[in-house]
Image 1 (cartoon, one colour):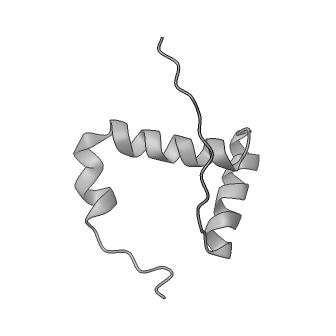
Image 2 (cartoon, rainbow, N blue to C red):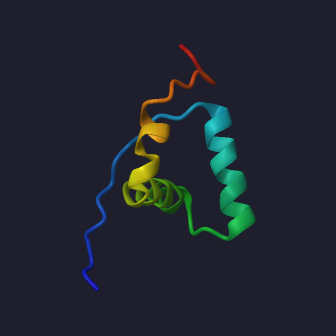
Length: 64
């Protein structure tokens, strides 16, 4: 299995988004916030048939 270097990035989240991720981390025993985000990105990458649903459907839970 190929291993990849993990690089550090900064992302901005709304408080409710952060809270949701924290709840999932606790519920599923995920290592930390960065691992939770990697899980979501990996899922979006692997599930090609859901790409349109994930990226093109307009969501406005936190409109600025």
